[in-house]
Amino acid sequence: MVASFTWRSTAVSATAIDLLAPAKVNLYLRILGKRTDGYHELDSLMIKLKFGDKLIIKRRRHPGIGLRCLGAELPENRDNLVYRAAEVFCAHCEITPALDITLEKRIPVAAGLGGGSSDAAAVLRGLDQLYDTHLGEKVLCTLARPLGADVPFFVQGAPAAWARGIGELLTPVDGQSLLAGNNWILLVNPGFTVATAGVYHNFRLTKQRDPFTLPGDSSKMLPAAHNDLETVTMSRYPELAFIKKQLLAAGAVSALMAGSGPTVFAIFRKEDAARSEAAQLSRQYPRVILTKPWWGVVKR
Image (tube, rainbow, N blue to C red; front, side, top):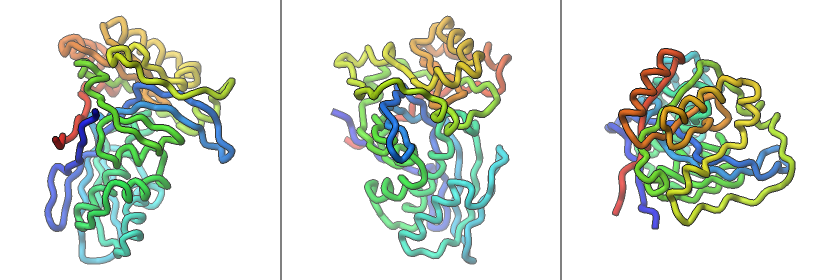
């Protein structure tokens, strides 16, 4: 049985809210087929991380949406998912937007860690609290779907979930059992970006496939970790395969490319091994982050 979880902001008042938008990694990502509308059918197991972006949303007197991005050069208009998420929420609730939003980017951009999707989801959740609208998870996920395939995963409260369809069909799972005590996650970003759409476009599916069946013994999940998109991204950037090999040699229980890349992540059981490898790799790559899974606030 999977415990239920709820999401909480780090701080909230009547006029402002401070939010964490967590990164994610895929323990499993398989492409099952391509739909007639051009989207791919996925079978993916995702978990949220304690590491993420920070957002501050403030209500103001005059109408409009002001967006300021720190830590990365990003659009501060409708080309940013954060801005569009605020528009979607306010339109649904028939609220005239009067907001100032500050986004502090910590998650590398276009890195396979779901940063943009998580930011959009945080805005939807945050505005629901700020305006005290109590829309509920089902409605928020409905608002999230047009914003991006991964946005509903970040809106829903479970720290880990299977995602199917194009990513919108979610089934919460017990991520703690799956990781079986292997709770140190090392992210290695080589410093360049990868366009998700291009990776999916270049993926060649030889035949339609059935969804993955979760092992009855959860300890077998990590050895079964897999990402179909590695073949595309690593063929273009062989350095990623070298990073993965280096992480496994350092004692990682599992190592995998995150999403469409280029970030590679590893799961360690021992903190000292994870910290030692983080120190080593930080001398080679611009972004090396040691974090843990985000297990949320458990409601018993």
